[in-house]
Length: 85
Figure 1 (cartoon, rainbow, N blue to C red):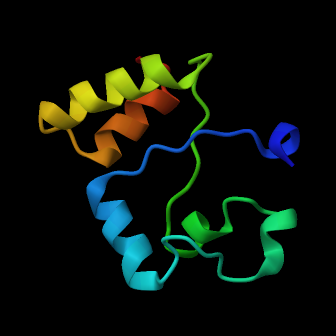
Figure 2 (figure 1 turned 90 degrees about the vertical axis):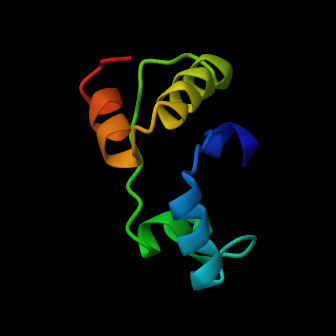
């Protein structure tokens, strides 16, 4: 499973609160994770974004920088999707 689903996830504070409210902090909405490992995120409207980052630390550094600058998830995700990292 690790090799099949090896992904990193950066969740904004507001998204984390939405996961908590939905009861998905450490559980899945169903056993569908074998087909869709991200089902807990899609259930609350978080869509995955692929980036050109090769690993987590540079991605997390950039996302933290944007968060500290007050840039919200919508703008950050748009920038990542457009390749403006």
